[in-house]
Length: 196
Image (cartoon, rainbow, N blue to C red):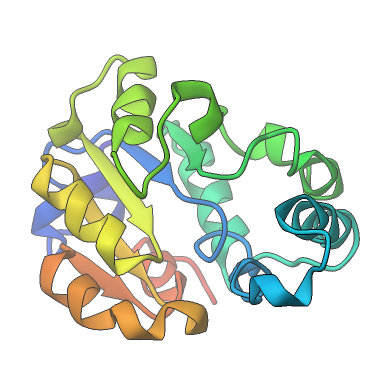
């Protein structure tokens, strides 16, 4: 089924789109509050912060509201879905096991695999699109960071922005550059006829 048919005619920007490329932290998973913690909280530096976050991935971090329901809906309609994240799959492995994320998406790609992070390049989204055999204009990027929404849009992707409290200061960029801005994924589910 085509995305445009699934979600309804009011989503004009979905015409011609064939796949969803989801960011993970702050978009699908409620974890940005951990990444946003100041460096001085970790005397051992970034290595200590990574292990702190790894522990939370393995035990406390939870999905954002309606995120997994949306993944299930897309999968049930045969729509290609991946996670494209700055977080390495190795670091997030415990969370993958907790939530069976391998079964919820077609693949996971980390910025470490493509050699550039979103701070400097949208290479990860291009790599994800290529893995699906698609062009940027055939893909929807789903992100919680305004500057990455803006950059992805400039490179030809459709973009859905998702609210996260840790990225409050980036809302102007997000609202200006996204095809759609969502407080959570319930609106998309309702548009597809799902009860939320």
